[in-house]
Length: 71
Image (cartoon, rainbow, N blue to C red; front, top):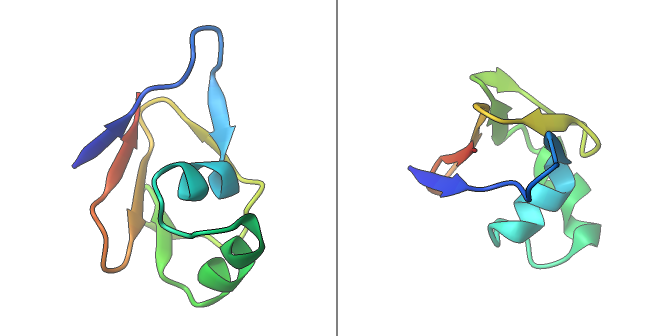
């Protein structure tokens, strides 16, 4: 499992930003396409909102990629 550290003072990151940060998608324009396919889960639940706030301790699972924990 990969861990992504938030910057000091930040409590969350938007799901779309996280997907770009971990190279799950090459561009921001492709985030929506990936979310619509139903291959992204946050804490085990399907997620299709790229603006979803992902907080410390959350685990994001992307089909075909390593899980990501936000720290």
